[in-house]
Image (cartoon, rainbow, N blue to C red; front, side, top):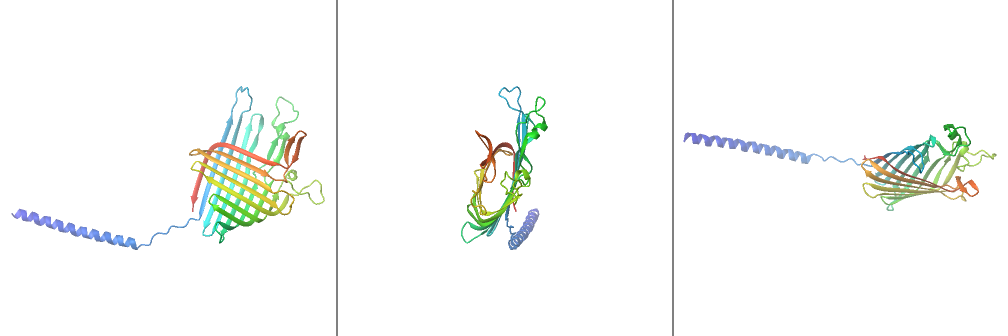
Length: 340
């Protein structure tokens, strides 16, 4: 009987102690919860910038052995960088973009490297929202040139030996363009209309800038003016003042397919009888794997002051015309997007 009473007393003491500990733990948890509720919430820092970088590296190679149909062994490499930074804060907005392209080709029929792509294009548009929906005051700047010299390769004249040498090909080539030859600069103010996230129309009735050609032998080709009192020497810079319209469309169909296009037209008030200069750029990206994509791009230019080669029954003449370039490439691609 004494043992039973002792056992009951011990169990009672244990239960009382456990209850006291439980009450203490519950009180501490309630105090911690109350303190956490009273603490101020962490405010998320606003993110106004969205930066995107897309880089492509493409290789091409052709090898022929006793190929009856003909052709030449060749290798090619091209690189493309497309970087952009978009800004949005309350009524202010902006979009800055830099595109760079460069490519080289080596073919067995010519013992020299030939350029296939060369382009530098920078543009920046900024706007401030008006009282009208989707309409903003705007200021824009764009600049276009290339990295180095580009040539057209004609057939070498009579030479000694079985095949023309590298020097023969270099003598036969014709210089077509170079760094800052030409270079186009335009700065304008006007209005920006963005009815949807994938479309924007910038109208700048007050635009000024000019065309620079630093290589003397190319100045006539790119429509530079004759120097005062001279019949053979041309100026290296031509000032322009007029109106510019730029339309941008960009569709992201899904995670693997996207398309963008830009049409720009510039009319020079200083030469009212000359037609507007028009450019049209297109770009298609189709990802076939995580880091590989097919890239198709086209560039069209109509500049009434630039002379192009026109071949007809009477031979080759220089006249105004439409310039067109197209690329289709498969290679490594990498895209990085960051908000801050």
